[in-house]
Image (cartoon, rainbow, N blue to C red):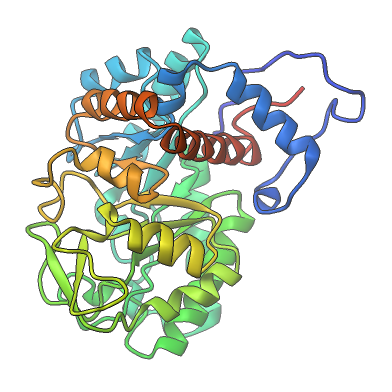
Length: 363
């Protein structure tokens, strides 16, 4: 169920009245859509704007319900990750946070989940059974599985899926979460998964940029390294061309690479990786979201939330201290006009996505 309870009332030109936007409008330049984005953006103060970049998690592996409720009541969330629960509990969360946002006049959240074929039965108990990702062997089965998952997510009200994994499969963390080792298959299957997901009004997310398949180690526990060439970056070109709306950046450092050395910093905090490579070189114009900011690969970086936004990430997933990150970002915005404008660009991207998801009505 997608919240349409918040209606922004303005005096529109007649040609805008009643206009509806869909997810496939996200990458299309339309003056009328930009007008809507600007009107919503201009209705928010800077704290509410920066709050749009924050996505805490609730559920068994997330923050306490009360913690996220408090953030929601202050307008300091842009989305909520539903992390390890049931269809029923997640539906209740959607209703709860929608009602809080509506009562306070805030923008409704984007709800997300790790609904990969391999993980969904663990992440969302009571969801429709599907085979593990690496057991899917035909494009027709990809389409079927993506549709089943999308149907379940739509019933709950989840509007962003952190899938597909487009990493190759050798890494122990990726393993059965990937479509395999043949990258032609991984890309074609991933693109079909993206197409079906986004045709159902749900944002697909390609992960984990710049590539987790050929590294050794687990970013949940520590910082791991790509040594030399980033072999998997090329895999993102066809999924970006296929208009995937979101890309998740991993907490992976790069060493022995003259152009993209990250100097022992995770990719999430590296402007070379996020802005120079993903945004500028690969021309990705969608939503850049971090992997969970409480993971071992990033959590020990001082002011890691601020550094990720400075690197060019649009959204912070599961920050350890959401309010500190917001304060850090606000302080830096006041000190640096170029950074402030970049933050504003990210906020407008989130607002645009919410309009295209139908979460914000435009009459």
